[in-house]
Picture: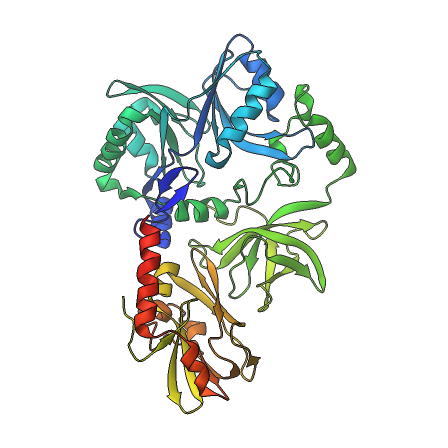
Length: 345
Length: 134
């Protein structure tokens, strides 16, 4: 068990590879209660959120979830998060655990009293249910109507008297969802999911497999792949930046970067042979350093080492061969590939 | 947790076993392999490399992390365990025998006297486990 942002979390239960496999082929449960939850409330809640985030929340219908970065005026990323639009006057946001205090301060400052900003992190637990059998499990435990939810949608449901939010969002590339549950009902929900999913192959998944699963999809991990020095355009999540939606924090800088063209971008790569890329290892083309690794692992699905990293353009083109410097021991050749690294069969 | 009595140890969790007058075998301890978890690849030094005590001689990658192996003694790399290229997980299953990493030819075997005894090493890992539990 490791302490993480004030929570004690298991890195693994049965082993990273076995847990990873369970999510890719059956269904896994993730206790992600450490994530932060913030509610924007009031007549000007939508306009306020719209000014803070880069994606277009106004374009989303109530009941839809929107993945979005929040940027500094420089275009650097404060955090990436999911906005759940309950109504124009009520938006529920899930933020990264390691950033929740920073985010909350930023939200309050940017909201400037236009609407209420409530930190609900200590009231909510969160269970992610992910894998090909996850929709079935969620339907069994929370109701048949959950099965029909399209991706990035959510419903409010009752679980033994507690109001829960069940959303078809996740961090693994598999079907399923994430359930926001008041603390008091959290362990009952967790146990019920384990019980109801026995014949579906359910099991708990630790932080280790959470990382290998998201990495195979090239989903960014804040602090590794994105931070205040990187922009969403560089990180390859430019689709979350809606420059045409009206003013928002960071727009000018992002517009400028888009006009001038990117100097570097985040790529996915596959190592040929052995050698695991790790955060901060340098990347070379010939004798010239062209970037650095931001995340890496042995891909449990592919059986080969894979990584993410920033490289100077035009070395970001798929097919480019880059060398990973393994802390000076050796350079392992790798090939830039089109993401995701893992494609569902 | 196995800590063979006739081996010597470092505080960076390598073990050393004397083979003959000037040849020692080096590996990582049972404690280290357990902390690392499933080992998936190993980077080995080149034969004939001259190494100083404390210098990095290899890297061990587990699913969770990469960690460096340091030379417990100064000398010349006389042998590397080629088996590890094909089956790195043998370090997990047999860290003190089949999972050895390199053999180093030393000029002065007396260097060994500076390393920890099995008792001292056991005390060290006991302390580390207590810290972990806190």
